[in-house]
Image 1: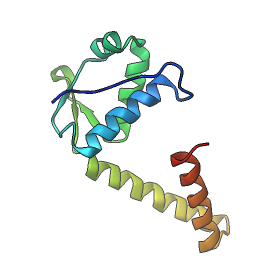
Image 2: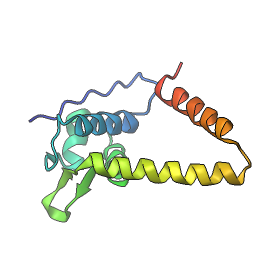
Image 3: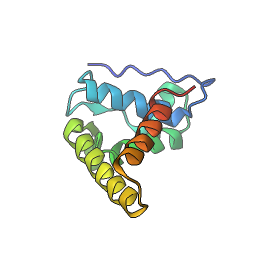
Length: 125
């Protein structure tokens, strides 16, 4: 199993976000199985020609999303991301629904807002 990453320095997306997205996609697709040990922050930064803080920021975001877990000195590993990602998404959806209701949005308006946000996120111009 090998971690395949390519960071485009000319892309509009920040390098840490590219790294976060690549690792998250590979973990969720199963190309990086649960338990796969990721390189150290310093090691990956050196391999990709990125600043250590850039890789650390991506790892923190991935850990916050439940995609990876740090086990102290043992290292950083791919977590069972599917369950954690679905739980986090469900929690965010519930929070949004409560907030939309407090704002007085009806179902159609709340759904349209989500649809627009998803379209802007997944299909940027």
